[in-house]
Length: 351
Image (cartoon, rainbow, N blue to C red):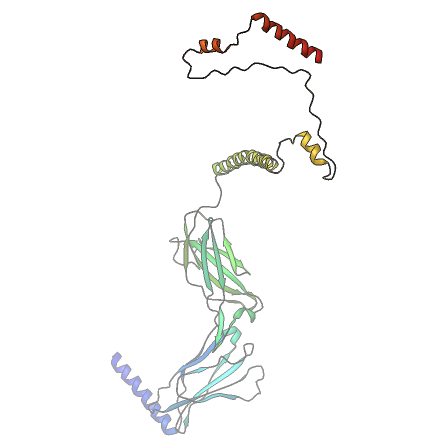
C-alpha cells in the first residue's frame, strides 16, 4: 500500500514537471533560507525537482524600508545552490528573491526577508579558566565577525553587550541551562572571578553573549572544567609562626647590625687615626722651621768622677783564686788605704 502511494506521488510529480516544462515553467527552488553567524550570511536553497538539467539561478534584493524601490540583481547565472550576501549593510532590512532558470523557462520568485543584525546568530566567545586561591579566574573575548581578510569584534555593532557565565559542580547536572544547581553571573567586562566556591572541587564553566537591547543571546561556549585549590584563607598557626619568626629575625638582625657598624667605625679609626703618641721632643723639633739654628742642650757636667778597678780573669786558668792573688800588687795595706784616702781627698779638693 505504502509503495503504491509513493509510486503514485512520484508519478504525479513527474507528470507535473513535464506539464510545467511543456508550459515553459520551472518549479521554484526548495527550502530557501539564510544562514547567518556573526554577520557572515549565506543564502541557501535546494534545486527544484525538474527533469531537465542545466539549471541556473538568479538572486536579487531591495531595501524593505523603501517598498516601491526596484529590485537590484545581486547574482545571476549561479549554478551552485548558495550565494554569499554578507556584503549587505548590517543595519538594513532587505527583501531577497530567488528563481531558477532552465533554457527559456523560468520559475516563480521565492521571496524572503533578511535583517542582518536581528537574524544573525551570535557565536560562542573564546573562554579561558584558571584556578587560583580557591577561586576560578574566567577570561573571555569575542566573538568576531570575519569576512575575507577582515576580522573585527561584533561588540562594536551592538549598543549593549555583556557576558553571562554559567558554572556548576561537575556531575551535578546534565542540562546546565535549565538546572537549578547552576549559578549565573552577568558582567560587562571581559573577565570575572568566581569566588565562594568549595575547595578541592571541580567546577564546569560556560559563557555566552547577552545583548539586552536587541533581545539576543549568543551560543554557549564549550564546557571547561577546572578544580579549585584551597580557599585562600591562611591558617592561624601560619600567621603566628610568621609573626614569631619576624620578631626573632628583627631581634637578631638589629644588634648584629649595630655591633657590625660599631666594629667598622673602630676599625676605620684604627686605620686612619692610630692611637700612637708621637714623642714630644720630636714634635717640637719638627714644628720648628728648617732654617732655624738647631740648639741642643749641653751635656750635664759630671760633678764626681768615680773610678773603679777592673780585673780580667782568663777562662783557662786552673785556679782562679791563686791567679787573682798573684796579680794583686804587692803594696802594704796601709799604702792602699793611704792612696784611697788621698784619692778621696783630691776629689773632694777638686770639688
